[in-house]
Length: 214
Ligand SMILES: Cc1cc2nc3c(=O)[nH]c(=O)nc-3n(C[C@H](O)[C@H](O)[C@H](O)COP(=O)(O)O)c2cc1C
Image 1 (cartoon, rainbow, N blue to C red):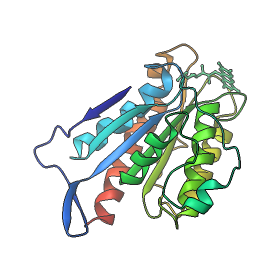
Image 2 (cartoon, protein in one colour):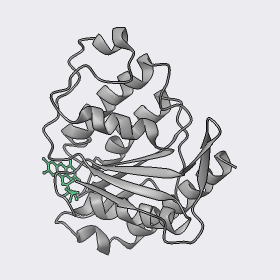
Image 3 (cartoon, rainbow, N blue to C red):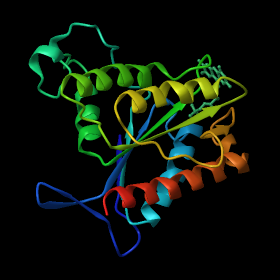
Image 4 (tube, rainbow, N blue to C red):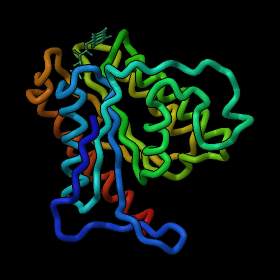
């Protein structure tokens, strides 16, 4: 499922690539199989601030998709065609969207003190494709958000940040680590501090993107 939103403000921001102008765009990848669950709510809170700032957004549902992990076939290293050699699932669609975006927001629930399986598959496969093609994610803005019930979210947060930091990406921060607390879908809305952390993250991500593309 893909949800695309144009900015609500009149002024939408543009990025120049090869002398052509494109709207500035952030994609959010929801790594939770629970569509509309806590991870999704956190992501949408961040995106709302970006849209307010005139930035186009798109949400991609990854959680619940049948995606394989990296098989270490190394075919991407030979082909260098900006794609994963495994075309049996939708991973290349996510990789293409990541390459095209100015900012990437990853969201995961905490599963056994780490990210969901689907997010780990994305990190390994997109991360490798980026690296073997000379750094396709270089200088994009990246942020991670995590939903949790009780513990382990900082570890999941670190796992996603590992993709950003090895890919020469630039990470905006917030007033706390980007975590929301909740068990059942929707619970996270009651975590006022978590929701405020997401608002500030969205504001800072928009600020950073605009500075980078001034
Ligand atoms: C397989 C599984 C493992 C989980 N492991 C943890 C965990 O280690 N720590 C934690 O705080 N919550 C854990 N949870 C709870 C979820 O992280 C929590 O309910 C979260 O809000 C789910 O987000 P979602 O609504 O986006 O799916 C786990 C849930 C599942 C299904």
